[in-house]
Image (cartoon, rainbow, N blue to C red; front, side, top):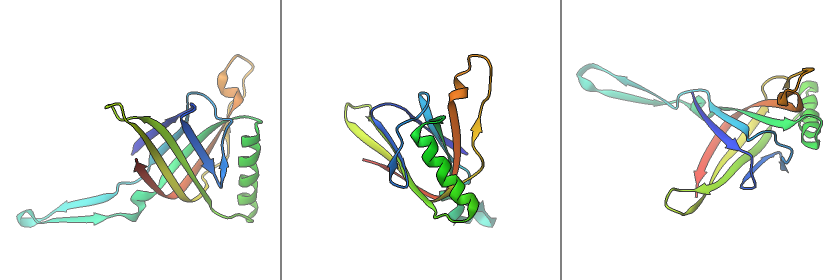
Length: 151
């Protein structure tokens, strides 16, 4: 399982079903996790090798941390309610980050997401003490395909 963190700054963009999310929490607001291996390699007798590509290797889990009660929270919550009621279309989305390549050049890394659904209910924290997580709603999605481009 590999993880990719997208940090919140003016150089980052995340969108779900055409809506750009703006009420993102914390410095790291997005976590993309590839759940499955992309291939299986079997070495047989006499060193023969079989490489099997696994379609499930494209599937990812994505978590967004948004501010509780924000317009983004309301938007995502309304999509989840639709999914729960059965009147739902799959989600499309993306997460992009503009950065440096180490040689002074600007690059954009984009994760294009297709065929997504909400994985589970919304994680949140309730606390009577000063805890920054009380202001955060965590949405988890599963996307059937995630294509990473660097350009």
